[in-house]
Amino acid sequence: MKNWKYFMATSIVGSALLLGACGSDTEEGSKTSNSGASSQETNAGASEQLEGKIAGDGSSTVAPIMEAIVEEYTAVQPKVQVSVGVSGTGGGFEKFIAGETAFSNASREIKEEEAAKLKEAGIDYTEMKIGYDGLSIVVNKENDWIEDLTVEQLKQIWTEDGKEKKWSDIDPSWPKEKIVYYSPGTDSGTYDYFDEVILDGKDLAKKATLSEDDNVLVQGVEGDKNAIGYFGYAYYLANKDNLKIVKVGGIEPTNETIKSGEYSPLSRPLFIYVKNSEVKENAAFYNFMKYALENAGDMAEAVGYVRTPDEDYKKDLDALEGLK
Image 1 (cartoon, one colour):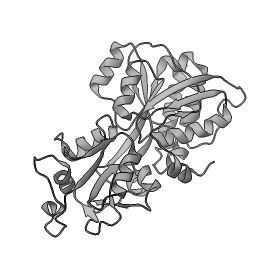
Image 2: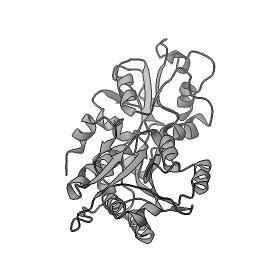
Image 3: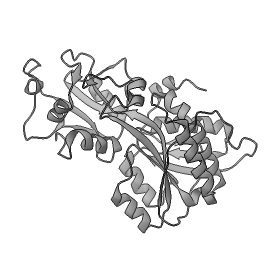
Image 4: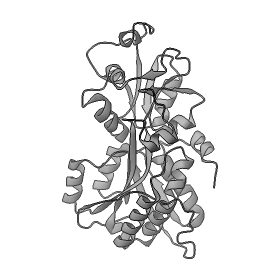
């Protein structure tokens, strides 16, 4: 297996990867809620060489796992091309609803309105859980006043209140310097999750720089002593030499604290939503998804996330078989 820490440090997740198979057609319209992928290494379909194209899109948080899977899969099935876009969870669902993709990566569960649109479009789908993430709060390396923030302080920092906030507004002992914000864009599932558990649905600071590309956020925080940002744990790990992690409620995000749920409320599951008709009608897509589920646990950990329990991956493999 390749050195995925190097891969993560050098890849630009904002671009699509071309590596493996295709999607078309629609069917009924329901949701099967299972969970993610097993830790075994596999040569899914190695005995039969397939051809085709597969298109996926969605979460930039899930992208490192999927890119790692695609990179390995192309060695097994070199004639299957998989393109993985990263327009954010919401943007990915828009393409999924429009019938442009066979799978959609998501860092949150599908919304009711998205599910309704899929049903209206006649697209039947299955939800698969492929790992866990700890949404990470980061500041500039030169920030020497923040080590730990409470959920209430995070809410105070990030909620729009009509004022231009300084760090000293949060704690009088902190610098009288304006807070500089870097946040995932509104199409991002990370944005939605942060909005839900930190902002309680209130507006995010209007001065924030928003981007669906987490690399933009990393570079922004790196470049300003007064900056604060948040994104998936894998992006922090890939850039930890240039960023400072912030504890939340005294707990630092690590593989162990994310897995145990101790890093709360910022631990969350990661998903792939699969188009059922594509599994049935496209042998290459079935083969790719089988490979993805059999390797997602290892790949999640290789790029810095946390695997789901093996029994959850087994459930999703069984669900995939049932879609054939």
